[in-house]
Amino acid sequence: MTPETRKKILVAVAIIIVIALCVIFPRVLAFAELAAREIRYLWWLILLAAVGIYLSFFFGRKKK
Image (cartoon, rainbow, N blue to C red; front, side, top):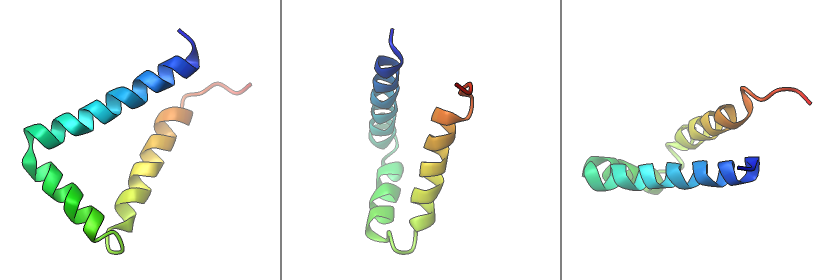
């Protein structure tokens, strides 16, 4: 399995998990809708998610 395929699978799994959470817990979907509407007030949520994604992909990587 190539690293590119592994990344694609990881992104697909993350999307499926988010969708499953929204279906299982409707309040998660309501919070996501609120955050989307009030993005100017909750910009830090996007920043936190971006930092989390960055760390998950690049934190444990070996230097080339």
